Amino acid sequence: MTFTLATWNINSVRLRESLVCKLMEEEAPDVLCLQECKSPVEKIPLERFRALGYNWIVARGQKGYNGVAILSKLPLTEAGGEDYANLGHARHVAGRLENGVTIHNFYVPAGGDIPDRTQNEKFGQKLDFLTHMRDDFHAAKPQKSILVGDLNIAPREDDVWNHKQLLKIVSHTPIEIEHLAQTQDAGAWVDVTRKDIPEGLLYSWWSYRAADWDTADKGRRLDHVWATPDIANASHGSRVLRAARGWEQPSDHAPVFATFDL
Image (cartoon, rainbow, N blue to C red; front, side):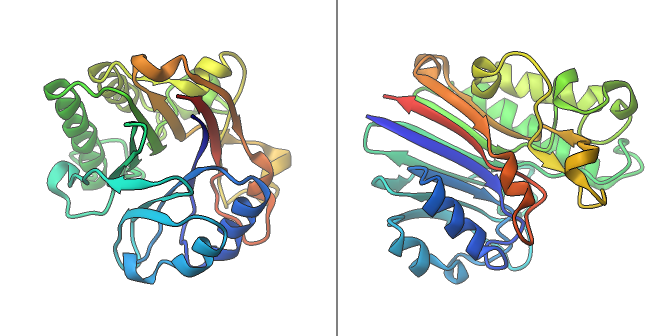
C-alpha cells in the first residue's frame, strides 16, 4: 500500500477550515495530521472533511488551546493518547492503519520566550514533555510507526535561518536540541524529511511578525516526520508546501509531506 501523509500546525481548525479543505482538494494526502486545532473534538468541522473523503478521525481536543487530530481517507482505529508531562493538555493522539502502521501525532509545547526553566515554567514543561517521550520510547521500543507533528524544535544548523543568532532563542537552544536527540535516539527514529532532503536550508515555519515573510525568509523547521527503522526506507517524496504559508489568513506553519510504500 502506498499512502501520502501530511502534518500541519493549523493554528485553529475552525478558523482555517477553508484552508484545510483547500489542502485536501489540491494535495489530497491520504492522512492529514493537524496540531493546535484549538477546538473540542465535537466542534471540529468533520462533515465538510468527510465530504472530501476523510471519513476517519482520531483526535484529542481542548477549547481554545492545543488539540491534535488525525484525519484519514484510509480506515483508521484509535491507538491511544498520552498526557505527556501530566500537563492536562491535548498534545498527543495515535491511530493505526489497517496495514498495522501506527501514526503518532504530537504537539510539543512551544516553551515560552526565556530558555531557562528556573525563570520560565513553560520552558521546563517543554523539557519535561520531551523527557517523558524519551522514557516511553525507551520502555517500549516503537515498531512499524510514524511520528509526526509540530515538535517546536529546529535541531540542525540548516533548519534555521541563522544558527548563531538563534542559539539562545527558544526552539534552537542546545538543551532543547539535546532533549530532542535523546527522544529520537530512544525510539531509534529516522528523520524522514532529512533522509529525503539531506542538505540545504529547510523551513516549515515563518513568524507572523515579519512584514514580508517570504522575502525575509527567516524560517525554522519545527514540523517533523519520523519513522521507525523497520519502515523508514519505505519513505520517499518528502517536501514542504511552502506556498500554503502565503494562503489567505494562513497558519504560520506550512504542511510537511512524506509518502510511504508499505
